[in-house]
Amino acid sequence: MPTDYFYSSPDCDLYPDIYVGRIPFNSASLVQE
Image (tube, rainbow, N blue to C red; front, side):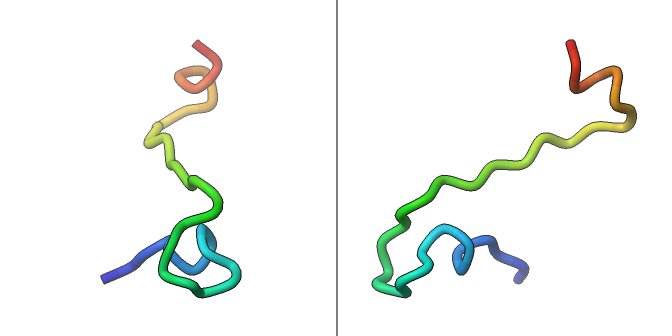
């Protein structure tokens, strides 16, 4: 399963330090709204 966990916990202590989110979109104009 793909995960962004390793980006959210750079010290690998099992607690996220940074929140990572993704915005699904089909075109750049949808993100700008």
